[in-house]
Image 1 (cartoon, helix red, strand yellow):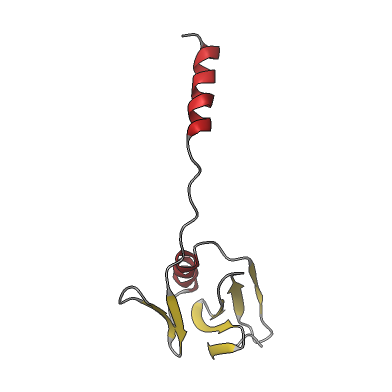
Image 2 (cartoon, rainbow, N blue to C red; image 1 turned 60 degrees about the vertical axis):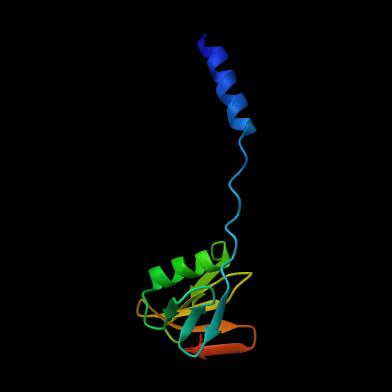
Length: 108
């Protein structure tokens, strides 16, 4: 098979593969100490590093954050359209907000 034929074969096979599905959300509850996973005995507690808390929440929500920024009180936040806003200070997860509900440090 010549190079042109091989390239067409590769394109044809690639076009037939299904796209990767979006990761389904994992059920969780927000509480006074952070986040409790509902289908297993795991938590994302206040005090966890910002990198690991953000990665864990991304897995729970099923997609990446849609907004991030700084708060007036030297904290920062990361938010998801279909999930909560997590508040961080000094590199640690310190609070959350979801609609009118919140716990821990606020983004003032």
